[in-house]
Amino acid sequence: AQSVTQLGSHVSVSEGALVLLRCNYSSSVPPYLFWYVQYPNQGLQLLLKYTSAATLVKGINGFEAEFKKSETSFHLTKPSAHMSDAAEYFCAVSGGGGAQKLVFGQGTRLTINP
Amino acid sequence: DAMVIQNPRYQVTQFGKPVTLSCSQTLNHNVMYWYQQKSSQAPKLLFHYYDKDFNNEADTPDNFQSRRPNTSFCFLDIRSPGLGDAAMYLCATSNPSGGGGGEQFFGPGTRLTVL
Image (cartoon, rainbow over all chains, first blue to last red; front, side):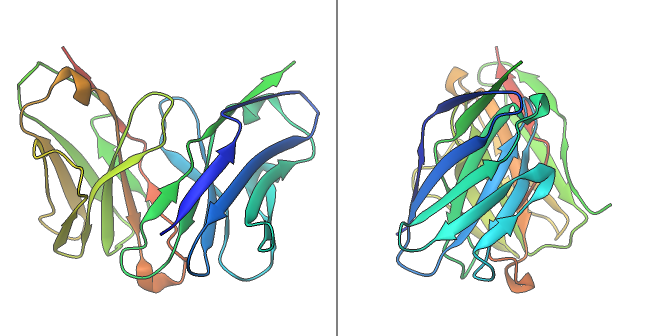
């Protein structure tokens, strides 16, 4: 069985500051890991994904994440926050196979202070 | 552009009045999913179709049904909506044989209000 824990349901940073959103996973099989972003009243948009290639994954909008197997983590970072980054962020894990259902974390709401 | 489309974006229905939400895709993906998302929560999977095979989640209420008449379209039917069914409903697709590791492509969602 797989599970995802996102540490911090709300994160607030100043514009221009480092963004760090934490995600830890549990998986009995080699995981595929994803970060999605959701803006108000919209669907989920893929930011980046880890599928067993490079452990440092670069995504859209300047975000990146590093897969650390020893820590079972897949934290999301961005060096300099922009006001447009304010949104809800979801980490998800898939075990592959079959219909490849995703297991989501509970989400982290990112607020950017001017 | 290939995409997942949901109609309508906003739907208002009355308590107990059946409602149908629509999803279509131009990605030609095998799998289509329906999620329910309530405010400040993660999406909750209701069911999915793998080609024509329907797969219900164990805790999905019987009030929720789905149809997939062809590869491109999938419908969510709520037979007797209750106030607790007010939520955002998200449709997603994936292509398990495409090597994406389970990446799902989401539509913009339909926000359902029950009066």
